[in-house]
Image (cartoon, rainbow, N blue to C red; front, side):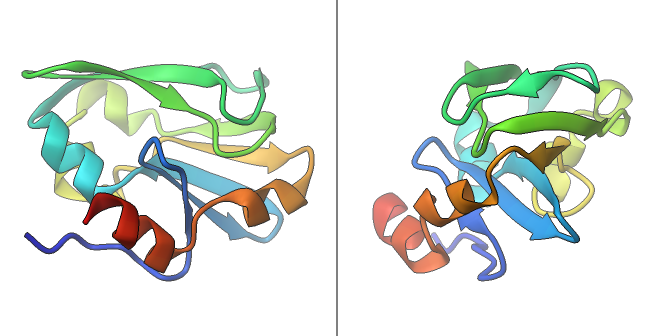
Length: 127
């Protein structure tokens, strides 16, 4: 099966993506991850103002098949949370790289993005 892996973002081995725009990093889970989980029924996310550390847990996504922890791709402060997911968690399945985004982080160290996988490296991992 072919999964969508946009080249404009970076990826974690734990299947989160990170997209830097104007100094803020938007985070979500990949097409592969949402497919593996199945129908997402609940998303638990941190509050705005929460400080995150790279590779540390920041939330939970729950599906009909599994409960999976979410890990921060970079360190920084949560500056936005996608509140739409609380009422419509299926957005994670419908549009994981668009409307299904989870949070936005003001990075403590933008260089951390360089430690993440490129689209090609991520594609190799899930192959």
